[in-house]
Image (tube, rainbow, N blue to C red):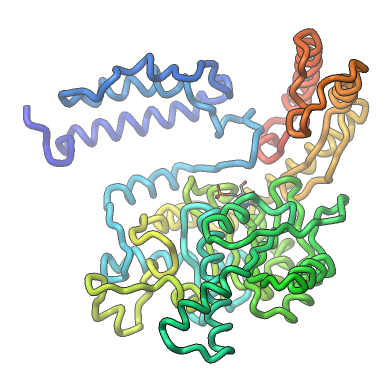
Length: 496
Ligand code: PLP
């Protein structure tokens, strides 16, 4: 028969949605019984699915069956209690419902007028979150600042870097009194060619990638303190002076609250002391993972230090129970974004934007269209309440500490590289390390392997031996983990 415009009749949708909700509930109820990792070979799906799209529509019951037969075998179960890689990537039922409603109401609300509530709810929840995190008042929408929800930390970093680049150029042109359009263009190109974005050698790779996209140089500021891995002000000053001596212009810096490698927190106080001497350098704080911990009053001394940065981001989709994507970006001065990113052709003009009384989030981001992401955040905050979210994060940190204690209790097997920071403990496995050193020094004089390949054994018999040893150790790790459920959600295994 003819397929209804929405793909299903109302009743078919209710049945399919009910069945999906039940399937999702069952997935979570039985998740711990599944293996964490898939055991398929690359290309498995090509073999399972027909080589071309179906000519005629299929029923939901046929489509649904393939979730178990085709999708599940290829899934890595990130929500599995034994998933230990990377950082957490949380989701919750209220967040899923937010996604469902967002998809149902599908509206790319780039301007306020496109669908006012999409903008207004985003402003409300971003202000709520800013207050929950204890960020300085200057990040609230009632002043000159505000928050916007973007896809990922990488997007927020690219967005602010482009705004930083153009702010630097605008200020320089103003100082030089350049006003003629052609002169502005020529001089801008000259200034741009000297610009350097900075990140520490511990900053996430998204800063380097953003500099590639923004088309400026990128330099790392080496961090010398291997006990804390935190950037100190004097290291930053040295790098800035070195670049100025070469005739280059640093215009942007990423500082980090919770680095990817060790969850290090840069030394914001000493950095602030340097930043005040270089007000044209935009400082962005990347708190992608650890920012969620700022909802705890015991961490809010860090929030207060954010008065020294131009912008701040954290990912709710890492640790605050909202599913990907929900990266929250805050700026102290929203005009820093809109002065660069607001371009208004005739078809985007409207009386509300012209009145200056509304926010058009398209001017705070690179894409035009945007998703209704605030809905899932709203649902999650309302379901858990601030107290519920605090309890969840506090529990994660407690489990991280417990994990570190268990690792310490087996110092014959493991060494702690950096102590628990937020939910993360970095540790290494002693025997494997020893064994690896033996492998590298096996006396045959050959094989000057590059650093990044060092962990790949060359000889099959040596590989087998190392694998067997790694298996033993993995078993040992799992035994420890089995004794205390849950904590692996917030910890990362390094070096095994
Ligand atoms: N910044 C930090 C500190 C991270 O730890 C990560 C991911 O682990 C990112 C940025 C990248 O996040 P996204 O995937 O949201 O771009």
